[in-house]
Length: 179
Image 1 (cartoon, rainbow, N blue to C red):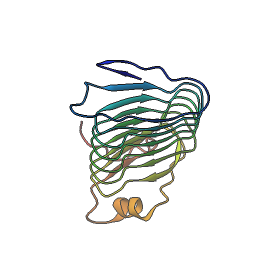
Image 2: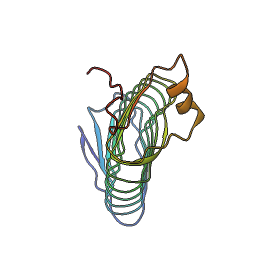
Image 3: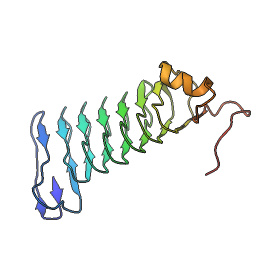
């Protein structure tokens, strides 16, 4: 683990890591978990976490977090703050929770993306499950299979008050918001 105040190395078998700060937050807490199946619980400060090759559970907790699953079938949780979650290779579960988050499922074919509250952006190359949440969301994908299995997401597509835009990238009639 690296912070503005120093570096801490973690290795060995599967680990449970907890980030905690007393007083002022360092500029950034940076963690590389390695190749094992690890569990990381973030701090109230900004965390930047790289999962490595294992099937990792990464919980950013509070603040603005940057969570990268990398290899393996990972679970990434953003919670509060405008978070960036990137699944990487493998079938990942990404949950932005509160605030405006960016969820990138990347190349897993069985990814599950859950936007939560706030204006989220959900992106993937090929996934099977999405839940837009309660905010004003934007969803982009380039894969052939998109399945919206949750009532909340479906109501956003069909309901008169929904402001979400879903783009399956396979139909010229799809509406895409201006950048």
